Image (cartoon, rainbow, N blue to C red; front, side, top):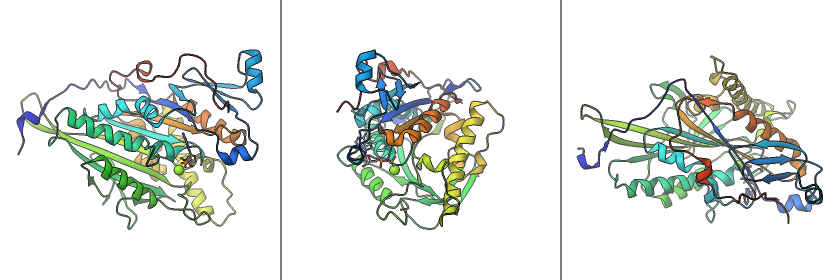
Amino acid sequence: GTNKENVQELDTISEKPGVGNRILVFVRLRPMAKKEREAGSRCCVRIVNRGDVYLTEFASEHDYLRLKRLRGRHFTFDASFPDSTSQQEVYSTTTAELVEAVLQGRNGSVFCYGATGAGKTYTMLGTVENPGVMVLAIKDLFNKVRQRSFDGNHVVHLSYLEVYNETVRDLISPGRPLVLREDKQGIVAAGLTQYRAYSTDEVMALLQQGNQNRTTEPTRANETSSRSHAILQVAVEYQVKDESNNVVNRVGKLSLIDLAGSERALATDQRTLRSLEGANINRSLLALSSCINALVEGKKHIPYRNSKLTQLLKDSLGGACNTVMIANISPSNLSFGETQNTLHWADRAKEIRTKVHLPRFSILQLHSFSLLPRLTCLS
Ligand code: ADP
Ligand code: MG
């Protein structure tokens, strides 16, 4: 039965079909790794102010101090996070508003893009001490549900899946590959576990476990594969009263996506033993690139069907969805090419328009970086 007190009044959603809001694009620079330092690498990325990223192989700190300006390629994003940025800060700036929107029945998605080792999994999943966006989003979601005493009305379901070698697998209950099917709600993975979640702790354990179920590279035992895409989907179902006082169900979905390493999209050695696998990874990320290109160019036909990944992301990219992209980069000049690539794609993704407006969203209000120019990697 339905408890009337728990039923929200129907909120009006100001969706204007055709009037798009572009996706928000963020860049996160990770700290220099010990390995990189030991290999004698220098920092080739500078983050200045809050959105400006300079990629330069040559400008040193000395040059910067002498010239009082930076040389190199310059990119601007909705916000750029220096290596000192906390997980909480990344969450608050990129995803908190999406969680709010999900509670109002809107869909949202956040995806991390970047080369292997650039910090995607750290950003999405994080560690037990420093939980990432997936965990912080769910924690925030449970808090918001509780604060508004919507308990009992809001039901939270989780699913966690992997796309590896064009095969979709359930990460909560691993088993046979799942088949994608199209239904009224869009593309769904048939038989995917919908786990009813009650608390954050339980979810953290579930995600850690799920991550261990991600396919590992045969050559790099115990390491999660750089070729696997992981998608966590959080569905919040609740009830509202419509104009005629009928109780109707609403669902808001949040998708959090840890993409495979983007370096494979360009460099694949067809002669290796795993060429098929390589080609398939190519297919997923290349398909993603093609979809982004088609969306940017405003094409009528978007080639979502070309890969499992793009079928699953269809709603997230072109549908009625608030979309956020976090591009992860390493500071090391040894990764210059990959970083340039990532920044190029992130820059291009800024042009994608989606079909909904993000309510009350203001980057300036949300993040708390210093207004002064700031250099990173000074150590
Ligand atoms: P990816 O998933 O993109 O391959 P990871 O997230 O696994 O990369 O990051 C590679 C390594 O760098 C890991 O050991 C991770 O803990 C570390 N790392 C990444 N980003 C950060 C960060 N912002 N702060 C501290 N360590 C980080
Ligand atoms: Mg990873």
